[in-house]
Image 1 (cartoon, rainbow, N blue to C red):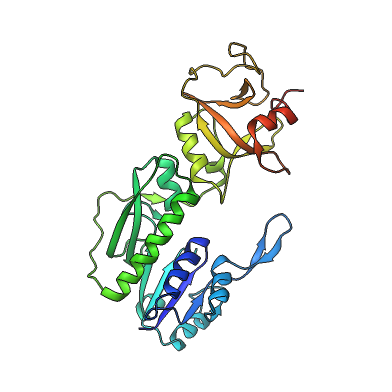
Image 2 (cartoon, rainbow, N blue to C red):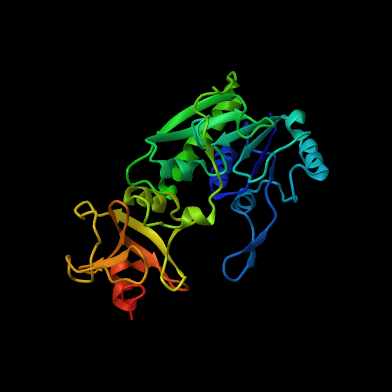
Length: 315
């Protein structure tokens, strides 16, 4: 059975590598998004799937869209009977959906978390588990029938990076099982549908008006690929890479530097310091900012930030 693989992200690249090691279902062709500018220098960079396909020696094409006639012709010429899609970043449309069996490796237990950011949303919501679903793509958003699914527990300290690594391995195993065994498809239930919207700038902002327990999950859900942020008094944004709940903190103000009972004096609402620790007072709870990144700077421990920059907003 000839397979064409369509994907873009590092998650998809890991699944592609697993498939490439299977003699029967090694993809005959890989399609991914075009190279695009990335980073501060806006240097043109290839998607992770493109880099992995080159390393694996698999023929690669980067059309503007897989729904374009030229891309559909490329797939047809590959002689494939099945198209595998994983984290591509664009909806697959007709006539491609009808021309081939299109299987999707989706990182959630459908129908929960259909959409663009299922791993991040599961972490943000405090779910106890997520998983992988192998589904047949249809015109609806991740609403097609499922042939295989497997759960993966979410650990209390999981970040996107640690959870995605396990889900990648599980996704590679399940898609190969689906291709080898051709299990029957079952329609998704109507109950329990939730949508994982794409991560927007507002999702990255740690709002101290929210509970600390929610913001701690946001930090983990966005690390290391996107990153959470705190707004400073001057309008700049302080990146937050790691954070932890302060289990002993009262739900009152974290106080001033070096004095647990001192009044809050930071210029940015919610930010304070105590005993060399950078703290974010929330409603309720307190979040310690363990690793932060100042604008234009490098990641550093919160204590080092305080020594070098002082309490944000204070002169």
